[in-house]
Amino acid sequence: MKKNNNIKLYLDIARFLDQHAALLENKKEKNNIFKIVILLYEFTIIQIGETLENIHGLGTVYLHLEKFAIALDYYKKAGRKFKYPGRSIDLANVYRQMDECSKAVLYYKKFIKDNPRNWIGWYNLSQIYKQLKKEKLFQTATSQTKKFLPKKFLQKNIILNNLK
Image (cartoon, rainbow, N blue to C red; front, side, top):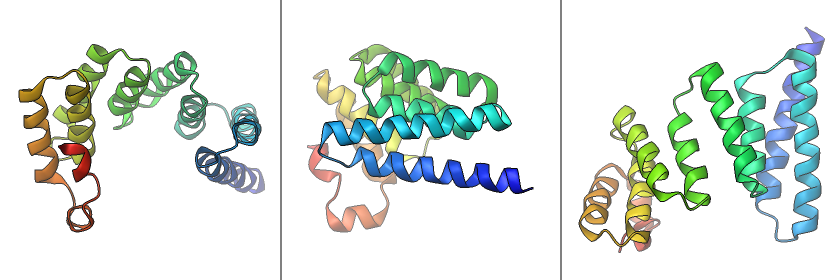
């Protein structure tokens, strides 16, 4: 039981450091923290094997490091092994970062098909259409984003500025 408690602690630390590092301005400091996060996730794999948390976590770290091909591999692996609900949006986000817009659109649409009321999928899809200058599709996705956007965002006008 103690081993599992320690692993949980390592995973919690890795998640915290990943989120903290993503917000840092100093690239060297950020990269050094990400290296620690990678080691923590890899250590948990050695100790307990591959889990959704450590494989997905590695994908996220590599996404933050802008090593998109590696991030894509980890997200695909997590999706094959664990079939988690956010798989499509993770893949879409990586393809978007790789500027593979057609693949990103495909995965955002898949995510929306599985989660039709999820505003994040609609928002990301709207931003791809905006980038591609597909005005009618942008307007449709924007309409759906606004329809499902939580009130707390509407009241603070967060997100809405990007939907123009």
